[in-house]
Image (cartoon, rainbow, N blue to C red; front, side, top):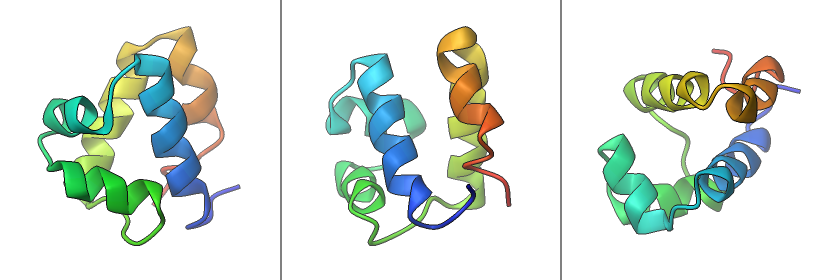
Amino acid sequence: MNTQADIPRLIRELRKRTGLTQEKFAAKLGVTFPTINRWENGRAKPSPLAVQRIEELLRNMGDDGADLLKHGFLNR
């Protein structure tokens, strides 16, 4: 299930689970709002550093993030 098409779904779902807007999610990851928007719309993919931050956020979410991690969305 590790395809480029899964990244927008992952980002959107993660943002929903954290209850953050695109702007606040961007600030949490240290990127800009347009970057999050491009990820969610499939026009760009996260950099390796952003992927690390997303994985860390998922791990810190415990069970709420574990199912997203186990699907391997972010495997490189």
